[in-house]
Image (tube, rainbow, N blue to C red):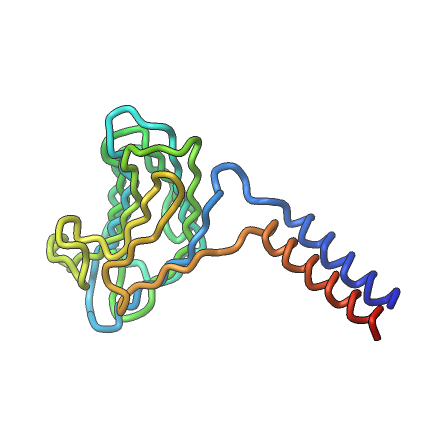
Length: 199
């Protein structure tokens, strides 16, 4: 029993060592876009835009990108955006239009992790949108939102909500925070100890 208790304690300490997500990473998602129905060059369009002119600060950080970038084209960045794929790209909502337009090779899976930070809940309509276009940079691919062409939109008002327009092409799964995993692990250890005592 002592060995089991020590293992639970070590696992909990390992998770504590991982640390909680920082204030700019309160909500995290893993996004996958299946482009197997298309070939050639496509354009990945990522935007973090405020709903109103004066809004509370919001951020988005893209990391762990996997997929094939089309190196024949330079990425286009607009507004409060920094970094480059396949590395980390940071978005802010300090200007009216904050966008990364990146050439990708279609035919495979595009994956990325997105972390969103909100300073205060707001009803301003700030949103992060993911869209995909053909080689002409204008023809929307997939069954996107009829007004914005977004395959998935993350509504950043009171919290973060993923609104998927094309579930056959896109998935967006929330990544649990390390603190949530710690609570789960602690509860499982407590249950295991309780069962041992009853036996």
